[in-house]
Image (cartoon, rainbow, N blue to C red; front, side, top):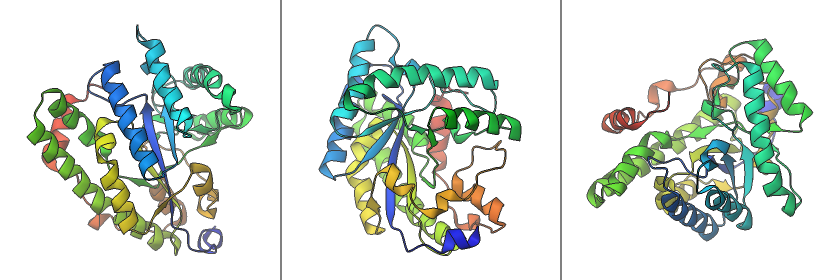
Amino acid sequence: MLGLAAGAARAEGVALTFDDLPQLSLTDSTAYASVTTRRLLAGLRRHRVPATGFVVGDKLEGPDHDARVALLRAWLKAGQWLGNHTYDHDSLNRTPLPAYIASTERNDEVLRPLLAPRHQRPVWFRHPYLETGPTEDIKQGFEAWLREHRYRVAPVTLENSDWMFALPYDEAVLNGDRAEARRIRRAYVDYTARCVPWYRGAARQLLGRRPALVFLLHGSRLNADSLDDIAAILKRNHLKAVSLERAMRDPAYAIPDSRPDEAGDEWLSRWSELLHKPLPWDSFPEPPADIAAADKRLDSEP
């Protein structure tokens, strides 16, 4: 496996992925989601960034169902991809396997009619919370279902805790507090600017080369308003945005992810355990304490 991981040529691609479509937000407002979607897609188009958005079906429920589905169609019209994030955003570590499969199937039924007019089908699956199963039997049972239905798991090898900043930012925007919104966005951009080189360096230390990375983000107003800065950070770090499919061609993603997972670790941590090679956690940047506290106050999701 070490030979497989280290033998390929240098890769500098990064795939941007956005979880919790149509939006991760403090508000259920469809109008708010519409502005977020429009700004986010405009930013992706402006920087010529391919992206994959992962849909949570129950976020489409309610009287504005058709308008929310239209937001997903806007992603497809923009040439982006949509993947499956389960219907209920439940954890495989805390949900019985049959119920988790049922949620994934229900979300598949949401996605297929959207993708069919474009001669596409659902390909990518991302586990909520990155939790892939507490036991080997559960993990393998769900992965057997994925294989049967021709899904591939979308891993994560770069993240910036964007979800932690997203709800405090929404609160400031919804309250009309522009100064606080600017402060939170600056803190977010600064933190991202520290996270990206850490993951890039950690991947090189672990694998002996620079693999293509898969960046976990969320469909939030914060990211919609920060995409120019995120693009600049990636450029400074010599990372070129590529599709998820292209990033996944990197041989690193052939390293078996065979162990049960109870922590929702990103894939560098999984590979670190498998390869018995440590990561430089002592230098990992911690999110600002006030942001973490604000997120804890606002986040009602268990």
